Length: 322
Image (cartoon, rainbow, N blue to C red):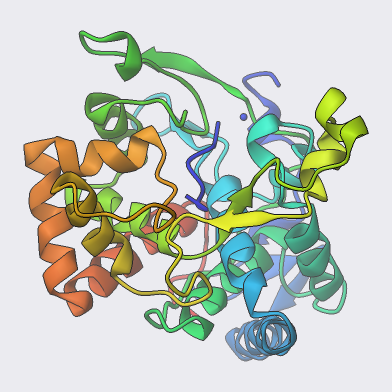
């Protein structure tokens, strides 16, 4: 998933570590003990969105990586009881670059860090959430507003979940805070359900695979093929789209191609699905949403928007969305 589902996130208290932002009221926030008004938050959020768009105009292929960066920062949240959470959209992804699931996000992270340096009123986590939303809209997807006031972590989130989830099959085991690409449909239900998403929402979220590309071994140097280092993967000369048709545009093509794959009508090179993609169309309960979104782009956009907000607004402290 971007949100690439080639995904997967120190100690229990690390996500409750020292932070830079605290709640000041129901409308504003405090940054480093300085009150920030809603007007300042609006101005700063608009700046982040403008800067993100300006970069995307120059490099439209960055839309997918920016969305993936947002998901990888936000999806590491785990609920331990009714009031206790660890991880989530807190900027900790900057400390998690060495995770295998996070290969390919160095470029978008550096871009957002540059933008964040110009807006003292927002956390890095706020900037990541705003940029992911802006990338979706720039690529032709829905307009998504997000709440602000997230707290930046000072260490990496947990890579392994504190509590594992599993049903009857080996592939349903959810033991990492970023989802394994090998999860079956029950594993997907466990993983995304723990993030507060309905089946319809998480199927919609998977539609982000319509946007962006993944690493291949094509045209890699002999030295990289002999020893596949992180640098080799980060700088792979050939990237392939999950869905070959217009990989820099956000649309419902992903769902149409899943149905074609299921009907054995797909052509060689049209798609590069991973197991979690195929789960959506093989499982009858999930396939109904694939069919719905293939028919109705507006329904897909609406569900995707709510799914993105559910994940990325966790930990936000403002009531207003920007």
